[in-house]
Length: 355
Ligand SMILES: *Cc1c(COP(=O)(O)O)cnc(C)c1O
Image (cartoon, rainbow, N blue to C red; front, side, top):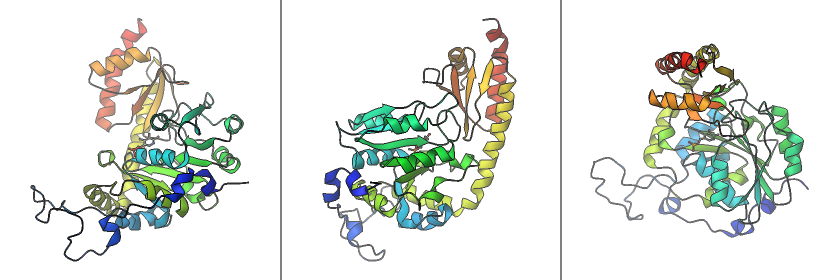
């Protein structure tokens, strides 16, 4: 059997004729443009935003391909990774019939997007140390299972998944395996993009929102075979990445050689933060992190969460999430921010002790 993209896709997807936008039909950059009903005089601010942007973001892909070690044709760019997640559901899963497999505790958007699209969810919890239960995952697969989402490094636990376990799932599952690498820049693990050549059913997601510091612009990346990328491009809204975003991402990529130093700074702070947290008497465990946050198990997690809010320090309460009982998820801040957090927690220590 094996993976056959044409059979895995929703049948009607292969019949879709792409919307041909003005910027598709004429791709030249000079001329008198009277084809897209734009305002020729420009915007009220005087900024050059009156023209539609490149629907396929060619300039970004040109720069990004060598950074990521993939071909331009293997890159999809979306309005956040969240757009890629939604497009994958819509391309592969028949509403009311197909299902996806999720591995809780994990990123919430997979479930949100599946629910919006009326796609069933099968859940196979991770182990207590947040690793993949490979055989249970493969046993959960049925004939309507289309996508398995593996988040590595995982949100909210912060660990990376065992690489061979991921490989085994990709090899044995004949649907699509999405490896969400939103936090890969903070890990010592190489990206699964290096393995795209081996696996036609693999799609790797990354984002500009975390390490690259561009969460506000909304731009996510997906890397896969040219065939899969062509499908995502076929069904996306034509102008899904704004021109302003494209411009800022290009400027960022010009400085790609500085990313490593920025990431190192965050990782250095992560070490300091974990050391300080571990010294607090109510902290039971800081789970090992390959991301820019740490999951921390503590006594009275909810009380501490509320106390921190009162101190104007906002962390994420994950204490109601499966396998994350009594846990808060804390993003690594600047050195100053982390110090203020630790000072606030230290002030609270005697109160927690007396509870
Ligand atoms: C933050 C995050 C993303 C990024 O989403 P964007 O829509 O690109 O901002 C994707 N996956 C996971 C697991 C995340 O934590």
